[in-house]
Length: 161
Length: 191
Image (cartoon, rainbow over all chains, first blue to last red; front, side, top):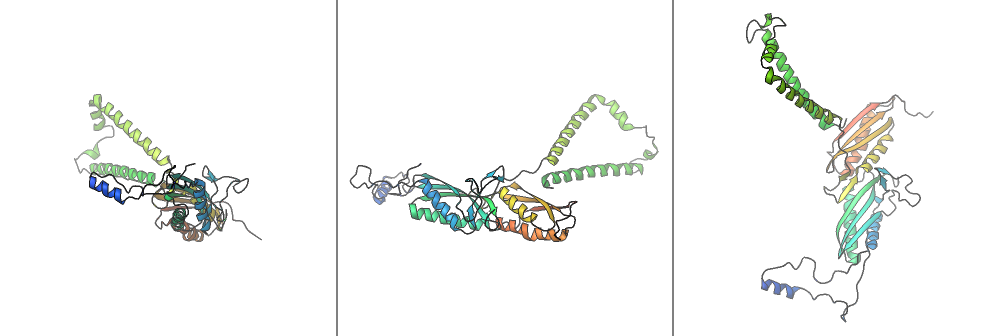
């Protein structure tokens, strides 16, 4: 599990190296104070967000879309026999999908396999999910979603297959 | 079916061969009509100047002929491979032109197959998705029952199943090859 400290201080990439001392002085004046380190009296501790939390937030966003849901795993191109039983996830528009998340510093990478109702425009559905996931993760955890990879692995007819 | 690339190669080679043979035939007809020189039409069959010429230059003619025929054999083999090799299957179809959003071709295949097989008059259907991830193509082979109304089923496949696929992918111009066949079986009847 990757530990994360919420974004503090200047954003990544804002302090590009410069060759002039004047520019460096200007940047030093403009940059906010560095965050307090452990041992400082002002140090209040770290907030650690687990990847599973981000994954659940993303899965919830898919669940809230009426035309997207969980997708049954596939083996050699076919849905695994017995999907929906014995703990194997089935393709269902009313279930949360399988989502994986990785946290690197304050950046999140998300992969998800989802099902979408057959004949719905996939571009519209996945764009809504991506925007919702990015906004929600940012709002609730302070982490920035760098990439949301969406794999539509099943197309469901009328609710469930 | 589904071998557009091989079909194009085959068609091109056959056109070239046909043009060569037509030119040879035209030249022989012209020679027989004494267009080039008089007396050709009155020659006997065994009076073969070509064979005499080859006999006179056999030291270099046959090695060159062997090399040329070997090359022809290799080209023929490549032609055969091109015809027999199936078109490459597509793994994942890109929805937004990148790898960020993809649709598994198996998912599209299953959805299309299930929809078409639900139509009245369809015995079974087989769907194949091939081509590049950003430029997929769809091949559909449908076996109809003996009593199916072919035009009606074809119209329904085009207006509903294939339209759904185009709508889902947001690709109104996606190429589709539709093969319809009639099986020996009649459709299920309820009495």
